[in-house]
Image (cartoon, rainbow, N blue to C red; front, side, top):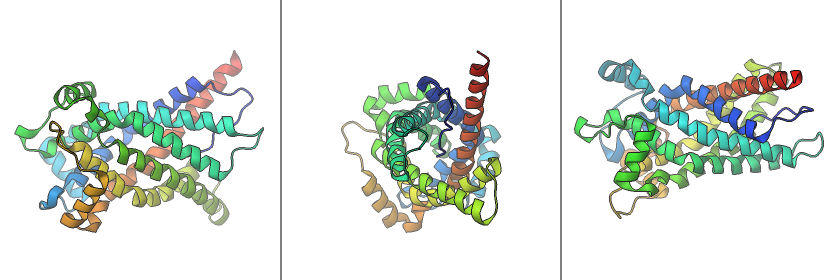
Length: 304
């Protein structure tokens, strides 16, 4: 996660929230197909069933052949709402706390940045969980038999039907692993992104700019993906399952143990490639758009 630029006229907090969410939403428009592939791969072989797809490319070709190219954007409305809630909250809280804890022109130390990053991630994850549940279900629907598909029209229809059919508490199904994933992702990204940038500048003679940000994000994304994917697959399995009455749902630890027992330990990293290629580019795109929004605000406010 990048550090906010300090300017003479600070950007109002409400605009930090707005810019952060808008940047995340624009980034999602580019990476939504990777989210769908990742979720389908994670559901493949659930419960010890025969693995449906050998690779993400096999899955991609199968979806395009059987369901059509536009299917790759199923769940886009849920993806956009997730960014509007999760990223808006996460980046808004992070930049607010960053400025609050800065001393004069000195930014917070690394430990403080890591702490506020994880706190902001947990808050954002909790707020974004309802949209995340809808996203998981909408992107996974096409793999089910026709008579078992939910056929949500859009994210609003999904949320209303989940509330009506399974209860409003289902909106926050999988909230614990979702928040746990957010902590892992934010902690890993903060540490590895900064280190990757320093390494590329010192060893490979990169200069500050989009190319450096992209390369550092891809290095960071590799480590972040490996660390957070087991939590993510548990979250996906929990959120995709239907809530039936007062039936007790399996927790994330039980889900992980079940995956290892039935599918093998490497099943915890199913969908690694689409997950990895989503994290890096989405991070870069989000911050490119965010910087453009910030620059536009500064230009406009300068002319006022």
